[in-house]
Image 1 (cartoon, rainbow, N blue to C red):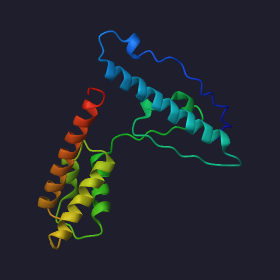
Image 2 (image 1 turned 135 degrees about the vertical axis):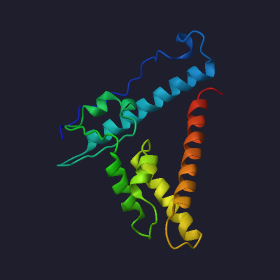
Image 3 (image 1 turned 30 degrees about the vertical axis):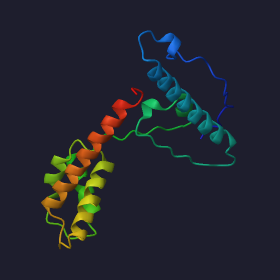
Length: 171
């Protein structure tokens, strides 16, 4: 890893502050400016931590939203590796892996197709929820009913989270 350069924590006026955004709701503009300020503080903290590191190190960082990470942080890493969407076979293999602790009556490839739009973490949530339902119902194997209920629960969760994200800053 390259040695990071010193971090500047000076603040600049944010262009989305309430005075510069005609027609925007004042609270929404404050929220956006606050969000921007929070991201800058996080970036400054990460940069300072990298600066303070001593000796030989390997640093691995991850983000589900790389577009939100300050470019100054990205410049501190020699390599950036992106992970694309899983293929159906990879999703099927992941389902098999996550359900391996219990007998299963499902067809992983069928479920990989149903969960095609899901991230690996979401597939894992569905599998663990189906396992939990199976064990609590004292069933001998994970079945389509458990997977369907788990998938429905994930969709409800994602709908709820989408509503929360949509409403942030609009109060």
